[in-house]
Length: 66
Image (tube, rainbow, N blue to C red):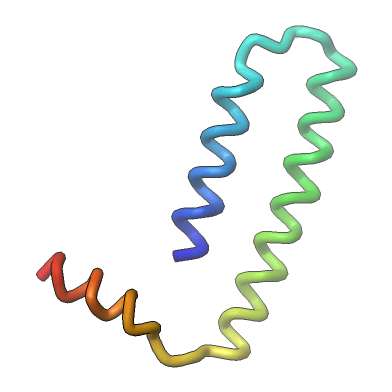
C-alpha cells in the first residue's frame, strides 16, 4: 500500500519537473527527493516494527484479485 503511494509520488514529481533545466532548481529538487527517500525508508522500518492486521478494505481488494 505505502509502496504504491511512494512510487506514484516519485513518478508524478518526475513528470511534473521534467522540463526543468536550471541547475540550481535541479539541485533543490534532488535534495527534496533525498529527504523524501529518507522519510519513506523510516516509514518502512516503522511499518515493519509495528505490523498490524489487514484492514477490511484491504482484504476485499485482495479477494477481488484472486
